[in-house]
Length: 115
Image 1 (tube, rainbow, N blue to C red):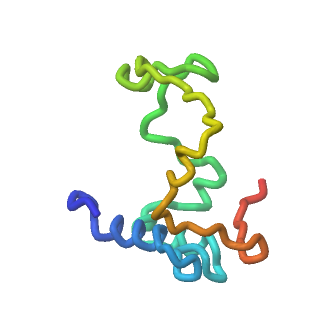
Image 2: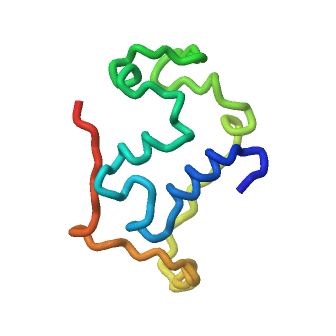
């Protein structure tokens, strides 16, 4: 973890980045409330935030849905290309060493707020 982060930020990130889903912050019986109660979020008044009574300290000016004026030129001027799809098996082992296994759908917990 970067040294410039506070101990509360370290704790929050470690909790959210737990590989074992059962130990991950927010995966317990209280779901997202467990995350909201973390020390790092202590200054946030969640009721006011959800009621949209808190105004952001910075609100960028946006000139439409696809406005890129608030992004650095190094990103907006970056050249990119879409590689062609390969029909060969040359890239068949590109994920060797990755350990992620998608959990069964029956074990997933969805904590989606309903407005």
